[in-house]
Image 1 (cartoon, chains in turn yellow, cyan):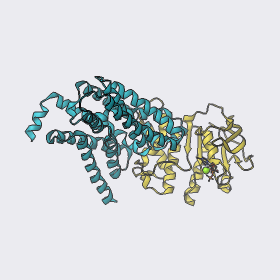
Image 2: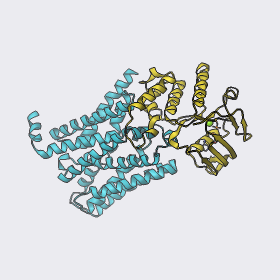
Image 3: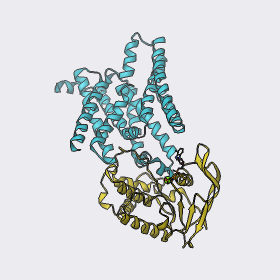
Length: 221
Length: 277
Ligand SMILES: Nc1ncnc2c1ncn2[C@@H]1O[C@H](COP(=O)(O)OP(=O)(O)OP(=O)(O)O)[C@@H](O)[C@H]1O
Ligand SMILES: [Mg+2]
C-alpha cells in the first residue's frame, strides 16, 4: 500500500524550482533512498515532503493514514543556535514531543524511550553533557536518537552518516536496516550509493528523476 | 537599618509591592533564554517602546487603570511583529526598529501636547525608567500585576516542554507535527504581557535588562535548559528583592537599582564561567 506519493511535484525557493517533474511512490515499509550531487535539491525535496516548505506545483499525497506525529526527522544541518544551553537528554527527550498529544509533561515511558535510544546510539554516557560541547559526530548521534524517539511509522533522514567514522557508519546502516525490518518506512538522503544499494528497496536519483526498484518491500507498518 | 526595614515591612502595601515586584522579576526571567536565542530580543525591545507609547496614550486619557489600554495594544503589536518577522526576516527587523522609535517619539509628543499633570518631564521619566518607587503603584496595579504574573508562570510551566522544543529546533518541531505557529504566537503574547508587567517595575527602557540579564548570567555558568531556567528564575527574584529593599532604604530609583544588581550578578557569573573555561 502506498504511504506517500509525489505527483508532478516541483520544489524550490521563491517560486523558482530547483527540481521539477518529480514522480514517485513510496510504499509502507519501503527503504527509499534519494541520491544526487551537492546542491541538486535533495534537502529541499525532503523539507517539502515534511511540509516545512510548500510545493511550487504538483502535490504530495499521504495515503494510508500517515500522520505527521508518526514521523521522525533528522535534519542535515540543524539550525540550532550555537549558544543554546541544552543537555543531551533534554534534546533526545524532545523527540517525544509528538506523543505528548494533549498532555503537558513527559511521562516515565517517554523518559525510558529516550534513554533506550541514547543507548542504541551508544551515547548513554553523554546523557548529561551539554550539546554544544559535543563533537560533530556525537551531535549527529544525539539528533538521530531524537529522531528515533519521534518515529512511529516513518523516518526521514537527511544524510545520517555524514561526519560519522567508518565503524559508526556501518553500525548506523545496520541500525536503520533493523528499524526498516521492523516495519518502519525509511526515506533517506545519501551520497553513499555503494552502501545504500545493499539495503534500499528503491533508489530515487534526482538527476535522472528515475526510481530504481531493487527489492521487494517486507510487511510495512 | 534593619529596624527601618522592619518598620517599612509593617505596612501591608509595602509587603504587597515586594511580593509583586518579586513575581514580576520571576516572570520576566522565564522567557529570557527564548528571547535571547530566538532573535526575539528585537521584538522585546521594540515592544517595550510600543508599551511606552501606549502608556502615554493611557496617561493622556487620564485612565484610572492604564493597563486596560497598554496590555491589549502591546499584545496586538507583538502578534503583528511576529507575523512580519516570519515573512521577511530582514525587513522584519527594520520594521521593528521603525516601530519602536516611532512609538517613543509619538508617546513623548502626545504627553507634551496633552499634559495630564504639571510635571510632564517627571511623568515621562517615570514611564521610561520606572516609578521612582514601586510603592507608588496603586492597589489595583498591584493586584493585576500579581494575577498576570501567576498566569504567566502557570503558562510557562504547562508549556515548558513545547517552548523548549520550539526554541531549540523549530524545523524539527514543525516536521513532527508540533503546532509551531501557535506556540510562537503564545510566546509572543506572553512576552508582551511580561513587558507590560515589567514596565511597572523598571520602566520601559530597562525592561530588556530585566528579561535578558538573568538568562545571560545563567547561560554563562550552566549547561542544561532546565538548570538555566531555574537559575535565572531564582537569581532574578533574589536580585529584585535585593534591589527593592536597597531602593527603599537608600532612596534610589527602584528600576535602576534592580537592574544594577542584575548586572553585578551577571559580571560575577561571567567571570566564574570564564575561569572555569
Ligand atoms: N534558503 C534557500 N533559499 C534559496 N535557495 C536555496 C536555499 N537553500 C538552498 N537553496 C538552493 O537550492 C538548491 C538545492 O539545495 P539543497 O539544499 O536542496 O541541495 P542538496 O541536494 O540537499 O545538496 P547537499 O548534497 O549539498 O546537501 C541549491 O542550489 C541551493 O543553492
Ligand atoms: Mg542536503
